[in-house]
Image 1: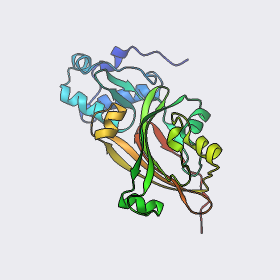
Image 2 (image 1 turned 60 degrees about the horizontal axis):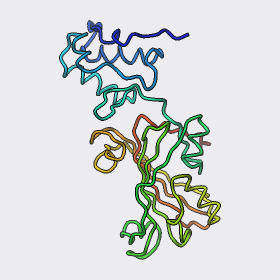
Image 3 (image 1 turned 90 degrees about the horizontal axis):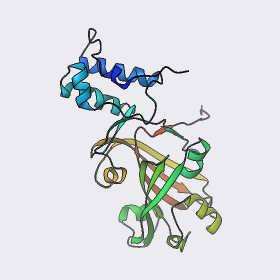
Image 4 (image 1 turned 120 degrees about the vertical axis):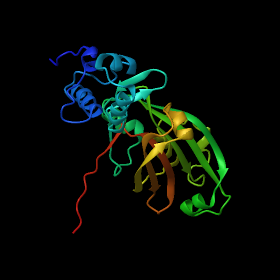
Amino acid sequence: MRPKTDLMDITRAPDASDGPQYLALRDQIALNIEMGRLKPGTRLPSERQFQTGTGTARGTIREALFLLEAEGLIYRRDRSGWYVSPPAVTYDPTRWAGFMTYVREQGRTPGTETLNKDSVPASSGLADIFRVAPGAPLHVIDRRRTIDGRPVLVERITVDPALAPDLLSHSLDGSLTHILTTAYGVTVTRNRVDMRPCALVRDAADGLGVKSGTPGLLVVRTSFDAQGRVVEYDQEYWRHDAIRVHVDLTVRP
C-alpha cells in the first residue's frame, strides 16, 4: 500500500541548503506526487497555508507552483486552487483513431461538446489547403473535448462540403471520424501532423477555463483520402499536461 500523506506535511519548510527555496519546495511537492502520496485530482494547500507552514514569501511559493505547472505536474482551476494533474493520455498521430476511440482504449471517459458549427467562406489560406476557390463554402466546427469530465482541448475542424454535404445536420457531440466513415464512406489514408508549443489565449483559454497564457500544445492535422483530397483540417489546442505523443516508426536509411 502507498503511504498516506497529510497535506499539511508538504507545507512544512523544505530543506533549501542546496539551492533556492522555491526549488526545494518544488522538489518536495514533486516527490510526493511521484511517490503516489499526492494522487491525481488532489487539491493542494492554499498559497496562504504554504506561506504559514513554510514561513516563505508568497512570491517564492508561486515560483514553485508555476514551475510545477509548467512541468505538467499540477494545474489550476479558476477560483478553486491548485490540483495534481491526472495522467496524460497517449496520442499516436500515425493512427486515424478518433479522440473518442483512443481515450476509451486507455480506460478513460471521453466527452465532446459542440460549441459552434457553420458554413463559412474559405479564406485564402484554407482555399490553398482544400484546393478550392477563395470564398467557396467550407464546414467549420468548433468543439471542446473532455477526459473524465476535465476540459483538455478545444478544436476547430474544417471539412470540405463536397465530401460531406449535409454534415452540419448531424449531431457532432460524438465521433466525427465515425460519421465521415459510416455516413459518407470517407476513409483517411494519410495524416500530416504539425505540433508546437503554444500559449492558451483568448478563445482557447476561455474554452478550457484556464488563465490566458497557460502553456499549451497546438496540434494541426491535415487528413487526406486515397485520392489525395483533404478530408479535414483540424487545429487542436491542448492543455500541455493532458497529452503525451507516442510514435513507433521504422527508421529510413
